[in-house]
Length: 400
Image (cartoon, rainbow, N blue to C red; front, side, top):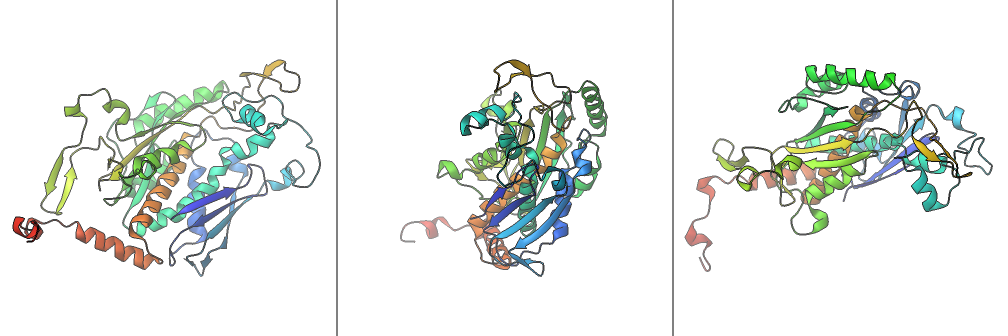
């Protein structure tokens, strides 16, 4: 089973992720991970922290001479700004220079302070920060490399930002990812991109923030990932949980889930046809997002992820209460972004890749990448249901 665990605080010395369950022989380099982390810093509307911080990656364990060993992989992402925060975030006994007592509405500050009995919001916000997603992206890089061995890939693009939406149907394919990343807001629609940039500029001018929606697309996902048998094995459920775990994400939609509920059943499902050329079943549409009954169908997997406007504003106007005095005040300000939706799309790719890779390993197994690939090919070959290969009624009858 593929699983990962992250550790570290936003302004701490480093983030660390341990990935367990990867087969041996997966080719991986520091440059692979660094490249994915650089994509996480993309997007017009990001704050100055993206310019100040660099992600210094170290493969600490589980990789030898560029290939995984089958043991847990440990990755460290050092914080290049640590010297500025060493006193404030020191693990040694002491007291902070400044205690934050005006929790931000919409953030984990107050609920976390109440849950753990903290008097300083920094004890919560440092771990609740979306900086933690850098460790997830590092783990997701490994998942993407494994999926590539199976002929699958994951792509994301921004489809809505600050009330501006892209035209429907303009979905990027894997070969378009570089062009999408080159977009100021990672949008595949140039006309919508211009409107989104204008919206970001307008919000920045008044110190406000914007939310939006990213669409994540899984290409080459094989039939049979997930299961209808148990509630916690359904692929759509696994994807929804993984995507909802991203900081500031408030809704997840599989396929056309949000709009399909208003249609009649005759217009809500994906018709099935037989493809003689490829010897496979096809769905003519993607209303179900490539998942039926909790199982992947072999079609394009589609998920949309909605992120709320960020809770930290460049113009502190959100009313709150000082937990020390109980007096009304405004929430404190940390360095922040106008929007992080373009980066959220990259993180959403990560979470989808981790789920798909985990379910692929559950289905195909394998102690090495070579074994996993062999098992995958054998499973695909078994699905080649040509009419001539179908058993006769006599052969399939009891006692036949």
